[in-house]
Image (cartoon, rainbow, N blue to C red):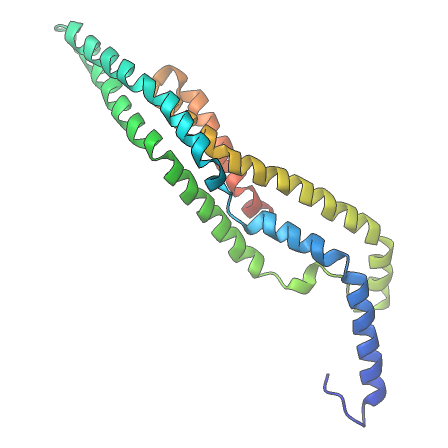
Length: 210
């Protein structure tokens, strides 16, 4: 509203109303900013890069055993076509396992960036005033005052949930290589698929919520 002599009274009322709204919404702004941070920021996988290196070192000790196992089966398979195909599959899975596990940090980081990017795009489409208390009409004001404490409680609970989700998403980089490792072992493929799907769900949960 442009203030002038002709609408001075309306302008004063509007400024006073805006001041009251700023006071009422002041406690909500830090909560909303914290929630937006946990929802839109990519998982902090860099903090766990050294531990990821330790995990990879542990898993890499099995590469040679799998290669020996596949080679041994290929040698003793003789004329058995089924055993030769099984040995070739083990060898192929081992090679793919090595490539994927060694690149797991990069793959997980890209997934985290993708999830945060599309979530941020959705959140930025929402009007910032949507989550604030407004004075549109008397009925709206009465409802907002009545449900104000409940709204703050919901915000706090949501922040706690998404802070835990953010922590799990960041720690997930340590378990992602295990999921890939188990996925390429046929008897344990279901376990590996479960770990990969669970971590992917954790990464994209803010997007679904937004």
